[in-house]
Length: 210
Image (cartoon, rainbow, N blue to C red; front, side):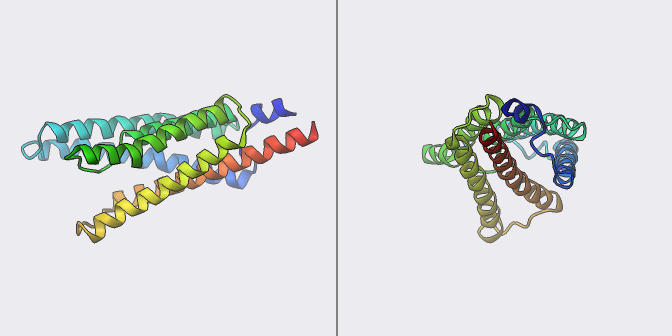
């Protein structure tokens, strides 16, 4: 029975699977539009940007491309009813890994670098490792699922807080594209929590039956 759980799709309820498929599709389309927008605007701003800006743009585009590829992979497998724990884990690991290299924090000091590691990089590295262990390697210890829950919840808090700071303290308003991306990123974190919970329940049921 445990082998069946590891082989079958994690999300088998049709209505939830359709929501997941739609979310994956929206992520791919939204992130692709974001890349196109960056490419279109880049020549218009070329005289106002320096090397650090170019580096940030390249890193963000790379992160978006990684997520497009893996969410498209998840989308195709979800449609085919083949999004097993290993395949789902690959999507989530890629999401956490890509998040490590994105962000809008301006780093001007060593203190900010340390904070950036604490706030963004370390949590997502830990999340990626826990996801690989739990989904891909099939580790059944509850500690891995708890780590994924905590990293996803922290990710939602970080996203909401950083955008709140931009609006309140920097007097910046979110564009339509930024708003859509904000909603999608929160939805992805919620989905990760749900996927982790469903896999935990299915594995526990398989153990009880065995």
